[in-house]
Image (cartoon, rainbow, N blue to C red):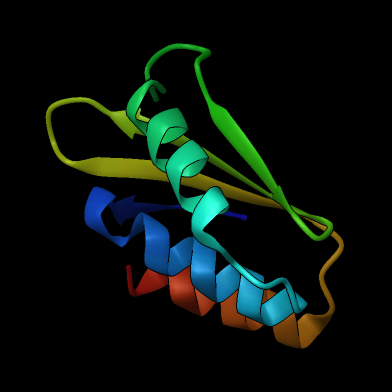
Length: 91
């Protein structure tokens, strides 16, 4: 599943994904995902991917408008999938 989020919401999105899968998001997760997102580009094959307990959170920055394209991949049950889709819709 994929969607667009505001750059400022990246940490909240990653935290929400980690809470859904039972992963304890920590200090050492924050730096790499922020740095990876900043170096990515949605208009080139330059994405950053971060694994969170079986879910891969891939992000690419759309330079110029403050948005990130987000792709979540992995095995989801129906409830988790609905929650993730809702989260992407409202961010």
